[in-house]
Every structure is written in C-alpha cells, then in structure tokens.
Length: 151
Image 1 (cartoon, one colour):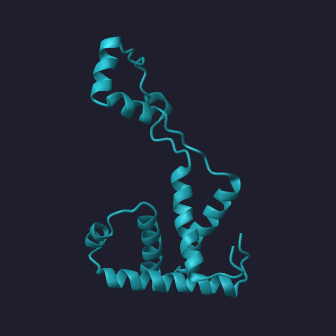
Image 2: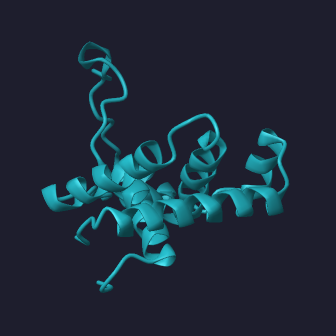
C-alpha cells in the first residue's frame, strides 16, 4: 500500500473494482427458467471417441471451473472505487471524463478490443487517453484533498 494516493494507485483500484464486480454471483435468469433435463450419461464408446478428439479434457475443464466469491473487504473496496467517478466527476462538464475513466478501467481489466470500442464511441485514442488521465487526476486530487484513508 502506498503512503498517499497516486494516479497509478487510483487506476489500479478502479481496475480491481471491475475484476471484483465480475466475480460477484449474478442471477442471469429467473429461478423458474433453469434447465430441468437430466445429465447425459456417456457409455464407453462415447468416452473413447471423446478421448481421441480431446473433447473429454475440454468438457472436464469446463465442469471443473470454480468461481471464488469476493470477500466483504474486497466488496467494500469495489463499492468505494466505483463510486469515485460519480462522486468526483459529477456535472455536465465532467461526464465525458467519468465515462473515459470507467470504460478505460473496464477495457483494461478484461483485455477488451479498445480500438473497436473507440470506433463505436467515435473518438480518437489520443482524446480518450487524455480524458481518462484528466479524470484520474481529478479523482486523485479529490481523494488527497478530502483525506480519504487508503484501504
């Protein structure tokens, strides 16, 4: 942990917040609309064919996926960091900075195609980077000015 807020630490906390947000369990559909079909039981011939095509390893890898939920401390840090753009970049003159900070952190977290996103926004990479840095500078200066403790 650094002694005081810095631009890089604020950027890391924003990216960490989106990683934690992705780890939260989220219901994707109503409870009544789940698959009620029984699991398919494979016979020996099916398993041999799956071994030859490496399908068995792929299916075992998919079934063996574990999602570790975030701890309460991580959730508290996530909520704090996701609140910063709304709290410190509110107002009509800063909405484009808040959007750049959020999208930049989200795209960096998930290794998204930044060029495709910028093409959809119809903005150059240079303008987007300048907006993101300006937003992070404002957030950092506000955190320092308000003496927000580092957690």
